[in-house]
Length: 122
Image 1 (cartoon, rainbow, N blue to C red):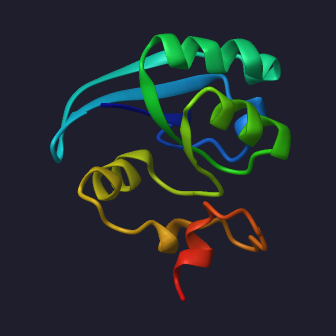
Image 2 (cartoon, helix red, strand yellow):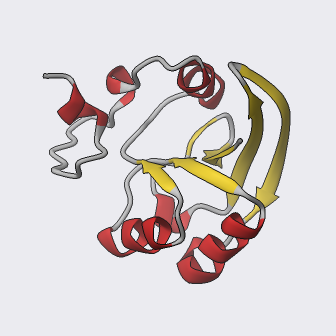
């Protein structure tokens, strides 16, 4: 399975729609077996989603994201974990081990998105 994280230096990019780099991790079981950084232009989200789909990326972890981008990714069969903030390696490690991401939800998030980890706390 391949997972992508919008990257800004060593952290999750705070805004999906302006991200320029993806960290793409190939995962087997609970192990990350490879990583690569790939350029992306989220201003053209349809093309970005098609590229991710061709690269067999199944999941994207990101920061804040607009509703249109959520819909485009989901229409391309890509599962989205939005409104996440923090160090990529910590978040990626927790995610591949099946641990919750609720403590990494962006401060001030009042999201009503069903995927928002904050709503999963209850």
